Image (cartoon, rainbow, N blue to C red; front, side, top):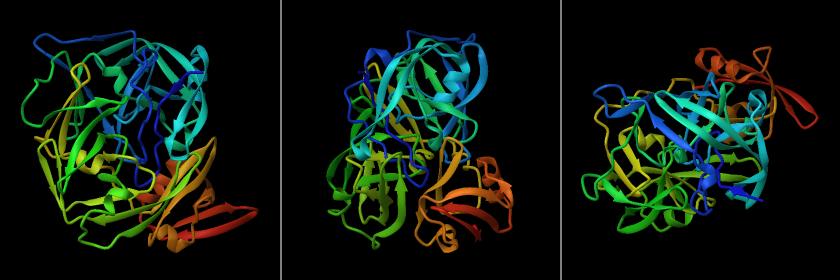
Length: 387
C-alpha cells in the first residue's frame, strides 16, 4: 500500500507539521505543466487572499473544467489533497486505497488515491494530476475544497509574495549565490538550516501555519529566555492532543542572512524540527526552486496585507462531518472564561444551528456570543465575551 506524506493542520494557534517520509514519489507530481505567458511577461502571477479561519493563502482553481473552487496553498503539504466529499461530487476516478500520516501520534489515516484530469490555476495548466482524498472537514472552512502543495511547481521557480498577495511562477532558476539564497534538502519538503544563538537547527517554510517561529521543546529548553514560558492551551490533530507553550527568547534567529532579534516562539513536545509560519513569512518574500533545491528568503518589498480582523475567541474549532467541536482552548482566553472545553460540540450560535460562517459572523460583531453546546450527555448554554 502506498503511503503519502501529509502533515495535519491544527485549528489554532499553530500548525503541527513535519513530514518524515522519503522525497516525493512520481505519483504525487503532475504529468505536464503549462504556463500561459502573455506577450512580454516572464512569469504567471496567481492572486491569493488570506483565509478566514487562519491566515493561509487561498487560491481559486478550476478542476476538470468545473469551478472555480477555493483551495489552501500550503508549502508544508507534500501532496495535493481533496476533501472526500468534493472528490465524489466531481466524480474523480479512485485509483486505490492509501494512507496519510499524522506524525504526532505515529498513526495512519485511511485515504484514497484519485486522479484529476486537469487543474487550472490562473494562467497555469496542470494535467494528469494525482491527489489524495480523505475526510479533512475538521481542517478546513465551509468553502475550502482541499490543499495545493509544492509538488505542483516541481518544474518551475515559485515565489510566495505576501505583500503583493500573489504566487509568481516562472521558468527562471535561482543562482547558486546571492542575497538570501541557500540550499536545501528535500525530505520531501524543503528543509534547511537556521541559526539560533550559534546553534543550527533544521527548519522548513510552512505557509499553512498561522504561527511565527515554532520550535521543538527540547531546543527551547537550552536557549536563554527573556520571559517565563506560558501555557497557551491544548491543541488537537485528528487523533492526538498536546500542550502548546510560548516564550520570548533572549537570542537571535538567523534565517538565510535575515536576523530576528529576541522573537517570541511557540513550542511543544511534538515538533521534531523548526518551522516558520505566517507571522514571520508576512514580512518576507520566499522563492523555491525545486530543480536546483535552492531557496531565496528576502525582506518583502511591500508590507503584507492584514489578515481578516475578528474578535479573539481563544479556541480552535474543528469539523467531523457536519459536527463542529472545540479542538483547543487557550489559557486565559474568553473561551476558557466562558467555560468552553476541548471536545465540546457546538450546537447553536445565537439561537441558530451552528455553521462556520455563523461563527465567523458572530466574531465580527460586537455583542456577546450565546452558545449551546453538547458535553457528553449534557446540553450547556454559555455566553462568550469575545475580545
